[in-house]
Length: 130
Image 1 (cartoon, one colour):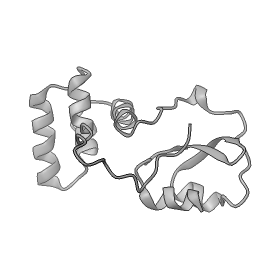
Image 2 (cartoon, rainbow, N blue to C red):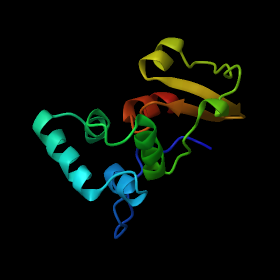
Image 3 (cartoon, rainbow, N blue to C red):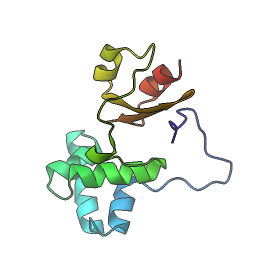
Image 4 (cartoon, helix red, strand yellow):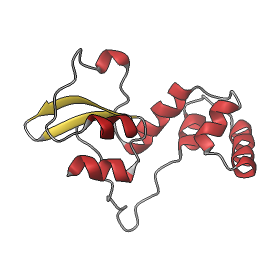
């Protein structure tokens, strides 16, 4: 498993990826009516839709994280997936890891696998590529 590219662009004519909300509705975790309520709260309060869904008690953080992983085409990791000791990665500063909530999971050759709280964070992904 490798990091998704922060610069990947959809192909011409390609369908847009389903939203996290659509994936939650499709998985039966959320009704369309509740999604519409959360969208209204998201717009009114100016908070992220995912945060709105959790704050309204409509889904759990795990539900949102699982749907986000599905949307991005990356695996969702549980505590059991983490090594007892994370690999040492030369040049990957602990301050950067803490600031972006990144945890190295595996290092095989030049391929680094990480767990991230925000895998869509383009700045953090670019920093990992350096």
